[in-house]
Image (tube, rainbow, N blue to C red; front, side):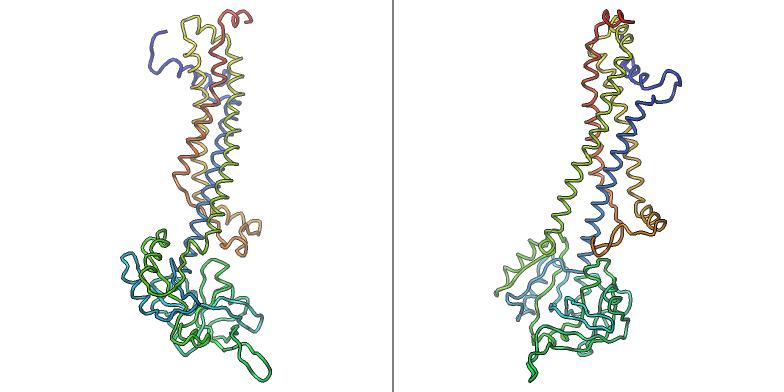
Length: 418
């Protein structure tokens, strides 16, 4: 057959997508194939965007509360912390360094008692290593002055203890005081001078900040601190940077970083994302393989057309191209529609979920289970490209068998039964 542009295989393959009765509309069975691929692709994009958003939000909120890296004393005390802070500050990738004291205690309010992690901070230095100044809902870190025994707690903890700014709390620590009546926990009355909201239930209900000097007196550390916290230019390089800083110290110390502190958590997110991707990819495969049944039916219906084309000189390869073109167009249409639908829903997922929660008076993410209360979504176009490419590949693979069957059709046998 003579060469045409576009090739006759593409023209005929496109024509086979249209219904005989209503020209211009995709046939019902082809429409089902397109919608199946579109829904599968859209769901996969949305789920991957939610997983990416969840990981990004949790990482951002964790880094807003914890330090990128920390160096602590081997026995919980860092005596020569001034020198350690100076050495850490000279590293070219260090942004800020702050001393800190950490411990455990119990806060006693009028309504309940809660165990908390104590963190003694220097308000002036803390600005460079955390986002607490931006997280304050009431009060400020600057109100933490040595000797005033002020405390800053999370919003969830404040609600549990039923306290606000200016209220008093009793803090008990494990280091006891020996009295004639026995061992009594050390206690001190503190004044609530600030309330923060980190957006992570773990910290909003279990972290209490105080001035580093008040913490030293309470925990009897004298002039020592627990360690230094370090903020670096690239958080992903924190493990390497803190090791380089630790090597320059001439004392035993313990190093840690945010990736090590939450290694199992982020590893579980990556594992879950991989498993979900594989499972949902099977849904895409099932939708794509629906093209097989579609093309098999088309091949059987068009046996006479195939015979006529063969009689006019069409090669078996040309017949194969016709049905590959038809299946590829179905896969392309479904993939494009799925990508558009997935991107629209993923970009507006927070608003959609909020509307559903408002209508049904329910909460999809319990903050005490999922660490965050918002429904995050973060689109990564590398994931979109990967999903689109795999969907198109599966659609093309689905066309091979029916197209091969059509190419093997013998003109004489096909016309004999017409």
